[in-house]
Every structure is written in structure tokens, then in C-alpha cells.
Image: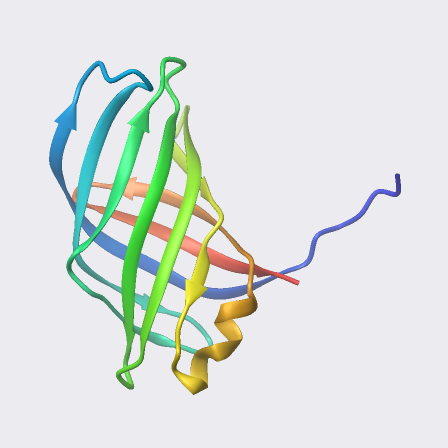
Length: 140
């Protein structure tokens, strides 16, 4: 198999405000942590706006110390369009803290942003105190 380089294009950077909502310790698949998303912002070359309250992350803390992510948030562009952003991913602890790697997908009916519906994105994130920031790229 040939060595291939994967091309990406920056779509936007998103910062979501977060707060722990509930913990289910000792569940069969690992400890479950529900994290509420209460707002935030995003901005990129072709779109910007806010993260609406009401989204969330259903985190599974796994036995090996990693976390599995299952996230759904709604973006509202500065011109009023709504975009559903869903993603799953893995978080691993390293020397610099928790590193998050995800695979976002988008859904919208807004004509200006229909191009998002056919993108497979990848993102790298870092959590902060009460927030998480992801840099999101489209695979080309």
C-alpha cells in the first residue's frame, strides 16, 4: 500500500462552556459522566457564531484511564442558521493533560451551509476549567 498523506482544511475552532451534570459510577462499560454544554462560540474562515445551551457529552471513563466521548451540540451561525454537530472520539492522558481526538459530522438545512452535510471532519481538543476547545478540520 502506498504511503498517503491526508489533506485537511481548517473549518473552525469551537469553545464550549461545560459543567458536570451527573455521574454513574461503576456502570458495566465504565463510569459514565454526563456533561452539560451551556453555551460557547465558534469561528472559522466561512462561518462563526455561538454554541446553544442544551447540548451535552456522554463520557465513558474506561478502565485503562482513557475516555470515550459521545457529543451532540447545536451551533447557531451569526446569520441565524442552525447546525447540529455530533461527534464521538477518544481522550487520552499524556504529560500535558487530556488530549481529545474526535470525528465530527454536521447536519443543517440552511442553504448557505449545506456544504457541511457532506464533510467528514476530524478535531483535536483540549479541556480547560469549565470549557473545552476543539480545532476542527475537514478531510479533503
